[in-house]
Length: 435
Image (cartoon, rainbow, N blue to C red; front, top):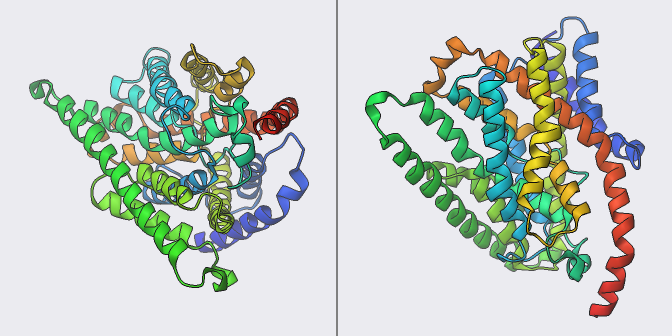
């Protein structure tokens, strides 16, 4: 059986799942990612001669496919946010980015160094790749389609930043802001005794300062210009229905491509462009078309990646995993991120229930796959791979993502349903008072 034939089967399964599975899984403690990974495992394990995707051997394909999934998911995440951008209103986001993410990286790096015996650059790399909350797999806890939370966002109970908003905005930004830490691990791996601290200065000025700034500026400019084109073009109501919302993909590719050419962070640019596009005509109904088009592409790509992930597991991705590695993986999902999130909200006015839910649902996923494949392709890690095999890192990361898919997938539906039931009566009452 050829790889092309397998690809056709995977795409067909992905399309069928995207159409049918939501109807069967609604209200059940089971998520689409669980089904996709399980289906991929069954397909590649049961059908003889099916070649599993090895992320080490097929590093370039893994990097490009996961990169595409993430940038489309970032556009979708930005379009879902019904909260205007301001420093106070986004306080929960800043806490998660400035406190929870660095704490997660540091704690994971320490576990990698002292529990797994990894070299310092490799341990730091492990921390960086598991740090981002994934915008791809967080569909059960995100902010929902645009225009669905505008009324509830006006309620005082949401002033600190609602659960769904906090997780969506965090996922939108930290997928890009984990890049400096990935580059830091690469810089540490390539540094020598004679370099002094010049490598650290270069990292701070270029990988932190310049690349983030370029992502922010170009993302804003491209988002603004495309918003003008989308909403000021002639006869917007007479567009062909079949292409309605396709501009979302155009903005995604333009923002990412142009920013990467300028050596900035394309992930940051895509999310900022989405926010600016979303802000331009706040309550325009066309946002639903933009969101739906991006969601369609995202679901197809996500399903493909997760089916292939299940196939990689069937092909032995987790074979190098040791019991210690499995314990570290569980600790990252069940202890490190939740603890980092709770610390981040110390001193906040967020309700304790909301703090706990946001801290727990630090979902790990496709973005982590991209970061690891990207970092291992860098020249400065070639020597380290002789000492620490790439298969070991992939096994640990694969187990972390699999654990997150299962734990968060099972818990997300019931937990968010319970949170919504508890909050909705209060929210409606406060909205009535505000009006």
